[in-house]
Amino acid sequence: NAGVTQTPKFQVLKTGQSMTLQCAQDMNHEYMSWYRQDPGMGLRLIHYSVGAGITDQGEVPNGYNVSRSTTEDFPLRLLSAAPSQTSVYFCASRSRDRSQETQYFGPGTRLLVL
Amino acid sequence: AQTVTQSQPEMSVQEAETVTLSCTYDTSESDYYLFWYKQPPSRQMILVIRQEAYKQQNATENRFSVNFQKAAKSFSLKISDSQLGDAAMYFCAYRREKLTFGTGTRLTIIP
Image 1 (cartoon, helix red, strand yellow):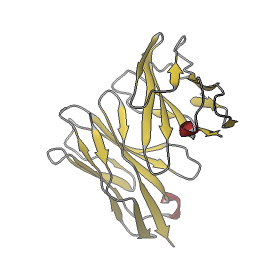
Image 2: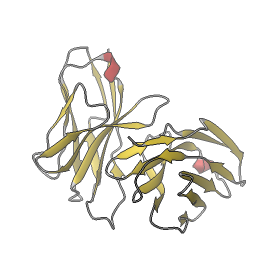
Image 3: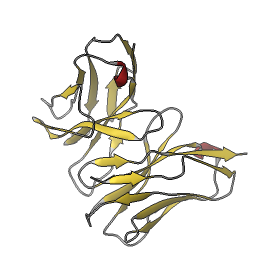
Image 4: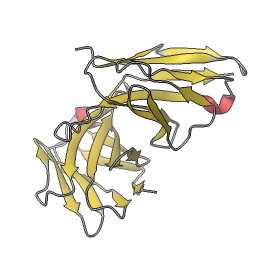
């Protein structure tokens, strides 16, 4: 298993540009989430999904869109990038099975918005 | 909303010694999970240990153990026989439905 994969690893955007951060998992996990990590702060939840076709907002959803058309993929879209969105983004997944509570994280995407 | 507080932004410990990282949380729920994650310079989030709230016994994973005090809403991490590879950011996290993180503690190991 590849686990949770994220692309790209690093991206530079100009203010106003749009882009999609990709996330995929091959563990057939129902739950997937996107977090952002800023200096001096822990990870904050942006959006999450409990299954294909179902998404919901987290703590800091503004400026981001998500969709979940398949179990495997959970892309995060920045519609119009702003410098405040400069951060490290982590995708994570876990099983709905309560006996499998571990959340698996991807390696992260560093985003710089100029 | 649940909150997780790590009051020690930085800690240091001599190699081979023991260090304890503090974490408190706020919740009105009785059934939840608590986690400690390690984040080395590579930025990869690595699960260190987890605790189910309904279990009174403290979780242990090799040199890592927790002191879970449910009534006090406290969840500290003890690292025994500290090694250079333990140097990292450590995040405490709470989860009932969504995972909520503390702000982290940077642990430095002194050779």
